Each structure stands twice: as C-alpha cells, then as structure tokens.
Length: 265
Image 1: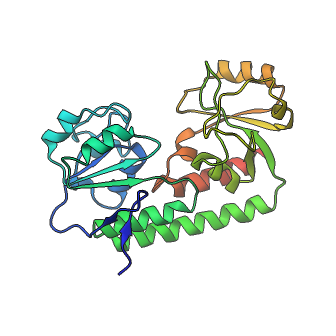
Image 2: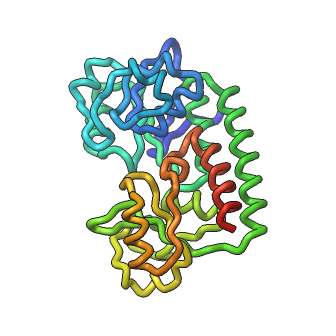
C-alpha cells in the first residue's frame, strides 16, 4: 500500500477507531464535512463557516493565525489538520507535541486537490467518497479547460489586500485556479508569493483585467470605482472563496470560473 504522506513528507497510517478531528483551515473544515466526517469534527477556527448548520455546534479554537492552544488541548483531538500558508509554523510545531496525528497540507496547484482528497480519504477511511469527489473535480476541470482553450487568454491582476496593495504570485493556488480559466496573473515573476505592488509598476501596463475578490480583503463597489480610475482597466468583482478555497469547494470553483468566463467573453 502506498504510504499516505502529507506536505511535510510525513507518513500517516489509516485511522483506527473513531477520530477526533480539529481543522485549522476553513476549506479543510468544509472538506472534512463533505467527506462525511462532520460528526468526528470536534474543533474548528472562527473563520470556518461552511457548512453553516453542521458547524454551529462545533467549538472554536481561535483563528487560523492565532490558534488558542489551551482550548485545542482540552478538546483532546486525535488529529489536527493544518496548512503551511494558513497556519503559523510555531503553533503547528507546538501542537505536534501533544496531538498524536498532525496532518499538514500545502496545495499550490489546482491538481493538488486530487492528492488532498486521497490523503484525507485514506487516513479517515473515506476512500469511496474521495474517489467520487475526484471524479467530479476531473469532470469540472475538463469542462473549464475546454472552454478556456476556446477563448483568448487574458493577463489579470488579482489584488488580495490594500494599504498596502498586495497581489498573488504565480506560485500560488489562486494563480493556478485563475490560469485554469485562461486568466494569467501578473506579475509573471516575483521573489515573494504575495508581493506588494504599486499601480505604476512597469508590469501593470500589461494588465488587461482586474479581478477584485470578496476575501481576504472584502473589496466593495467603492473599491471597484477607485481601482478602475487608478488602472484604467475593466474591473470585475469575484467570489474569493471560489478561487482560494481548495478541497471540495474546488469543484464548485472550477464551474464558477467557467460561468464567469462565459459571461465576460
């Protein structure tokens, strides 16, 4: 049997008995639930909001960046699921000292979702559900790829913050999702995965469209007007969850991007 390895290369054996899971990332919490493990979820962050009804009674352990370790410890989880980008390394390392199994993930491309499904499905005995999710993902990805190949590509800017203005580098999951739709993010090269930028940067000249997401910064209609004036380019509001949330939401995200591209084509 192929070892189940996480982003740190650590092997994880299939769970024996009933797991007690704490998820430290919203998209992972949603995936845990969609794998049929909602009853095993004993803790989540305050940002974990989907599925709303199921999570209503699940205790919170702080935020993704400020996990309350004392609260987490009292929940006595058998498994904690974390992400390299979303959670602080020091906190995860401390958690490893008192939680038997800490699974660390780091999806950076759209297709990394397939490995994520297989990893969590294998660890928690949900292989059949994970396989079904993979099939849906492959189908949605194929439909988007066919559409994107029929349309001219566009160079886009995807701001994720302001004061300072920040965007995404090509070596990010968000950029990979947008590229699947034929939207290639700028800058094309950056020493940082989430670079700070100025609107007069030389590479901004090549931007054809600006996508303003709903998260992590909640851009408003006022921001749309300001950015349109600053850049002199078409500006489109976009659902940030559909682009940045990996896991089970990636299936809906691929379909969302297909619909969006059809509308603006």
